[in-house]
Image 1 (spheres, rainbow, N blue to C red):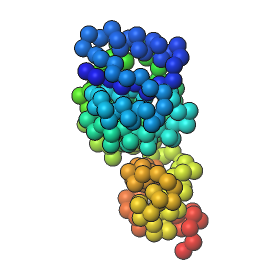
Image 2: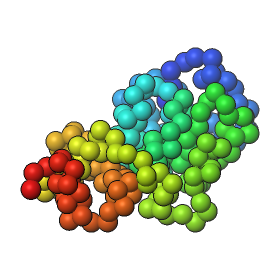
Image 3: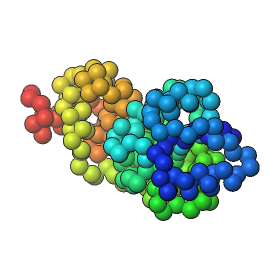
Length: 214
C-alpha cells in the first residue's frame, strides 16, 4: 500500500509516521509540506491513501484541496488529521471525498491504522467524535439529520442569497472562487438545516428572511 503524506513536521507528525512505518505492507512514498508538491506527488505516485495532516490552519481551505487530490489521484482514499472536530466540517470533507477525519491528539495507533486501511478500500472510517452522528446505511443526504436544526453559517447565508437571486451553482462558484461541487455541498447543507427541498422554497425562505428582495 502506497501512502503520500502532506504535513508540517512536528512531534505529532513524527508519531504518525512511526506508527505507519511499522506496518509491513505500507510504503510511505512521499512526505511533503505544501499543496502544490502534494498534488504533484499524488499525480506521480497514485497512492492508495493520502494523509493530510494540519498543513492548513483554515479548515475551509481543505475542501478544494481534497477535490484537487481526487482529481490528481482519483483512486486514493483521503485521511484528514486536524485538531478541528466539528461534525459539520467533517460532513463537508466527506462530501468532497475524504474517507476519515481524525484528531491526532486523541487517537490510538490502532485507530490510525484502521482509518488508513478503510481509506485504501474507499470505506468510511468513523472516529468516536463522528460515530454517534452517522448511522449504518445512511446516505450522504441523511447524514446531517441531527445537525438540521443548527443555524446557517455566514457562507451558507451568502450562498442562499445567491441561490435565491436565481444564480446557478456554476455562477456562484465563479463569484465565490470555489468549485461547483463545493457550492452543491453548501446547497445540500442549507436544505438540511432549513428543512426545505427545492430552489423555489429556498427563494421564499431567502425573501422571508430579507436575504434578497422580492
